[in-house]
Length: 148
Image 1 (cartoon, rainbow, N blue to C red):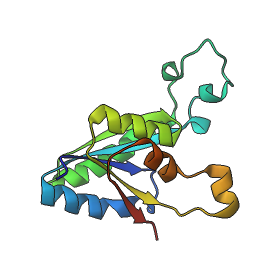
Image 2: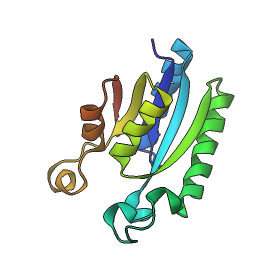
Image 3: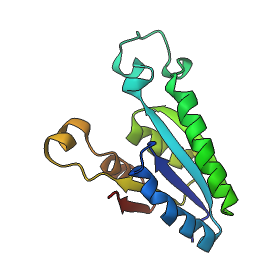
């Protein structure tokens, strides 16, 4: 039985395809949902790539995208609350796979729900697989929804 489900979203309708499944799980099991949006390091603070310099910590630099991501997640969380589901929102900056793993550990998530874009070939080589990174790092169930 799940008590706390981490739901990853990237702002796209493809990623949002996981939401109806997360709602069903939350209502069936009485679980709380934490929505997570990771602002990519390339679009946020560059510090993970060394572009800003070694003297500044990554957490000290706030991306302008964080406010947009926060507003987006709060809108989604509010819709979930109106549907009778306990929901909160978290925005992180950095590499998506690492931030998902870290957040799952921080909130003690019982499971993770996410959509998969099923990248193949050169796209997978260039962008990697966030899902694959998460699967290899965590020992919690991961609910994957194939984004249409």
